[in-house]
Length: 402
Ligand SMILES: Cc1cc2nc3c(=O)[nH]c(=O)nc-3n(C[C@H](O)[C@H](O)[C@H](O)COP(=O)(O)OP(=O)(O)OC[C@H]3O[C@@H](n4cnc5c(N)ncnc54)[C@H](O)[C@@H]3O)c2cc1C
Image (cartoon, rainbow, N blue to C red; front, side):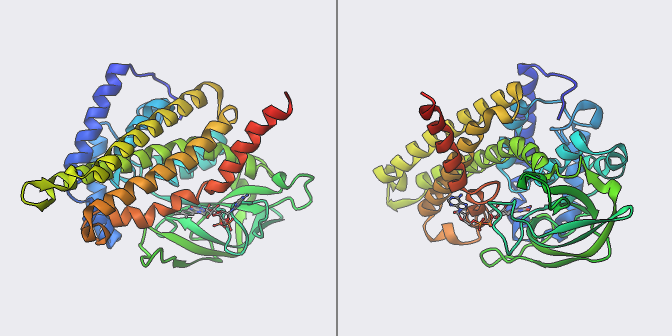
């Protein structure tokens, strides 16, 4: 976020080494236990790790220096994000996890001074968590202009009424940013909704349940909630940006967000790939004959390496262009990386599971956690089909103008 201090290539390399060491030495030994949960029982240990990250000057790397971060640009942060992605608790420990990082970016750019002081500051310091409530169970999230949640003005307050789900990490969060229709008569469907900050102790707000995902509801940071807003009243000063700007702000939030997700996925790919290679070498089908000697396995190793490398180059190229020209100018590239890297992620995790045989589907390794939790990568922040369609239409437009 708005770097105030550019770091050199050599300094970045030093930082990457420091992050890699921290992740391998502090997080790898505990992350399987943490994801098995209960997550809340690990909060004190995770808090201690956050303090350690702070003391090493590595906490919240995405923030500007004057906000306690490292003042990195998007390309630099992306490379750190890949390392953090290798552990399911990496981004959390360093306070740059979704959805908090997106909310920090939003409040940083569009929040009022009061919102920044009351909510952004504590969020950046890792004292509180937040969530983002946009998707509704009854309407298609992939076309969010169909939205039933309303925020009706009543004097100096908005009265919010609606039903949302997949509000990631709502359990244990202090506030949400809720997307609600404030201007139903606006000429464009993209100008009807607004983003409003709602503290989660507001009367009328209910966390209905943490939704069970493939048999696991999870809790706290590792959960997705169904929530209800019944006549929730918040002051009009809780509006973020202007009325009717909700979709425009959501686009701002999603641009860098997709870079963050893709680099995190590449980190997961690297760890799963490492597990795949180790298992292929150590598993002997008969004395002296490792699984790695089989050509099918060698193909998977070679294909995975090529696909991970292609993903990284593509995402860093998009990040570089976004840094120079803004998110709007790289819409095609963002769509491309979103579906391409999600697909590589699925393939690499699946191959790693297959190489592990029955062990791969147990909860004795991280592979099953990722298989369950990262399947959503092809759905959230725009399903594959929407991105592919957008990319193809954009390409075809150039042909029709020739
Ligand atoms: C792990 C996870 C975390 C999430 N976190 C959040 C969160 O924190 N906050 C939040 O508000 N939401 C969150 N979501 C919700 C997410 O944004 C929606 O699931 C997504 O927008 C898709 O909406 P939907 O589920 O209603 O699917 P639908 O819109 O019903 O779409 C269903 C399917 O239809 C197909 N489809 C849709 N549109 C097209 C098209 N134009 N062309 C062809 N096929 C199409 C796709 O295959 C799609 O998967 C999360 C979802 C997941 C899985």
